[in-house]
Length: 330
Ligand SMILES: *[C@@H]1O[C@H](CO)[C@@H](O)[C@H](O)[C@H]1NC(C)=O
Ligand SMILES: *[C@@H]1O[C@H](CO)[C@@H](O)[C@H](O)[C@H]1NC(C)=O
Image 1 (cartoon, rainbow, N blue to C red):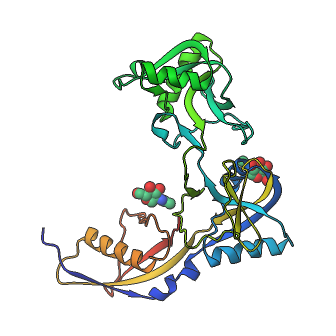
Image 2 (spheres, rainbow, N blue to C red):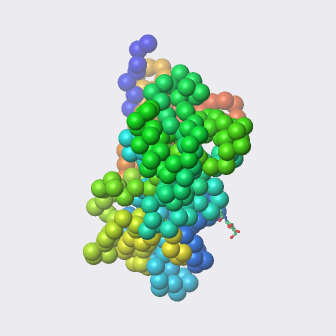
């Protein structure tokens, strides 16, 4: 198919500036919670814990604090993932913590056990349980995981699995977790070790944002001398000025949530073509243009809304196509 050259002219492009598109607010919750509790609270009631890495973020945070004359420190969404799988030190992607877990104090090493309910709890690594090893066979879950019916502490279990199989079990998804939980409930076993543990042995565990915003290390602002991580301060709190310092994630503190609002904004594109317009080419061109305009923002996805007649574009008599776009910033 011959792709026609098309030309896009964007009117009112200036309107899609950061100021009008950056539609979020920061909310201060004064009830002290641990970092993980605060994260659940923000995710359920707002969008997530606050990401604070621009002057605008810091201004909004200050505004939220000033509104209630708050002058203390509160959690924001910056943290380090300290839980890793024994096998190749892989950070966790899938988790299914039991309510209230993890709860072993951060000054202690902690290791993770699974219950017949499928939920995970952190325990002292010196506790003795049966355990799941993983083998080098991937064909079926039965072959992949081996339950060892001997009680050992987590470290001895790790040595046993590494000697006789591959390692302690890494659980990557709900299918695997459900399979293992069923083995436990069928056998009436109350707790087994899996390969997850909290490790501070990895030299530089990177900081990340709870809402998966990409970290801009040059724009995050630590209090001078921070972070002073000594192995158990893996969450960041901020002053009302947005300056961060690290603290133990189990410290109950007030916290800042961030909430996105969606706003509909009309942008007019004029499209000229030297032939028949191919819809997908037009869409691609508009998306490219939108990304350029919004390039300073984290626009992970631009979505098209389909009209009730199934069409995306409505042609106007003037041959201009008007399209409503939502300003979505994820
Ligand atoms: C969401 O907010 C309500 C009301 O403040 C609170 O009761 C609830 O616990 C919050 N959700 C979470 C997950 O904390
Ligand atoms: C936008 O589209 C992407 C990819 O098609 C989809 O994953 C995402 O959920 C959509 N977002 C919204 C808000 O509709």
